[in-house]
Amino acid sequence: MLDNAETPEYPLAELNEIVKLVEQAGDLAQLHIIDTVEFKGEQLPLYVITMGSSSADVPAFGLFGGVHGVERIGTEVVMSYLRSLVASLSWAPDIRRQLENMRLVFMPVVNPAGVLQGSRCNANHVDLMRNAPIDAQEKASFLAGGQRLSRYIPWYRGEQGAAMEIESQALCEVVETYLLSQPFSIALDCHSGYGRRDRIWFPYAGSCKPFPQLAEIQALKNLFDCSYPNHTYYKFEPQSLHYMTHGDLWDYLHIESLITQANTFLPLTLEMGSWLWVKKNPIQLFKFNSLFNPVLPHRHQRILRRHLVLIDFLLRAVEGYANWLPQAEVKQTLYAQGLKKWYGADDG
Image (cartoon, rainbow, N blue to C red):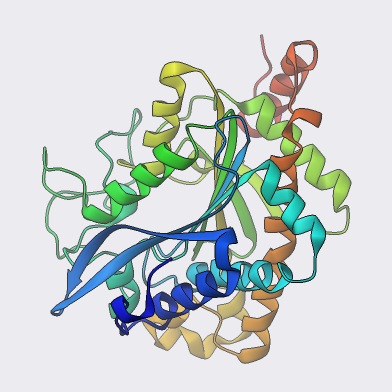
């Protein structure tokens, strides 16, 4: 925890609230500054909150937001869940029990400069989700798939051969330190701006090849469908069904997780369907930031409520992963189901 005397007030409200929430949680939460980024003379911290067990034997759940600054609703969803969790610590014994059996990691504002300036990119005009040092294995979408033509064109990847941006490196460090070190982990990265419904994307963004943990994803989807049969507005699918990109950070981190094959890491992206908000309130078309965030107060509140169910489900799925993670005898069947559902093929 940071001492108040050492913590300045930042121009971004979420950074100040993160400190207050950690103080409210007391010794049940730890606040880390992974790095800082400079923006208009301010040094902005890249905050990470950890809660729960530090044992190497427990599973972990990571919640991320604000990778694309203009998609502020992603940060707000993470903050909404964090507020709810911290408020529950004083009266809900099951929360404390969960924290004894798992690790929680929160990085609500991956790109604080982008959030402040209302831009997709960071202060260096780099799109962090195109910044990893990997290229798409198939043809990437023109421009939107990541480009190196100019930093003043959206989806800029950064210079060829340059180190990843500070924010990208920080996210990777957090995942490597707190998630990939555990036997099982799930990461949920909260975004908005695609389509007319909410989607849960899994890798790969840069390849049409089936995701190696397809059986595990199918099992997780089946578990969600069984647990919440009336919660039908999420569509699980690989990102590659829609467009291909270079430099996806989650592709990069998942490939890294496969090197040792010592654990299971499932990176997921919540892609909130912002075009549904625009359809219901067309005036949002005339303001860039409004294309990616709900404007009307009742709709904003509904979005913050809706996704608490998903996040709580994932937290419990992580804690109880040993009870649903498919073993050898059913893996092949689940893999074949996923192959047919998402890739239009069978296992033959």
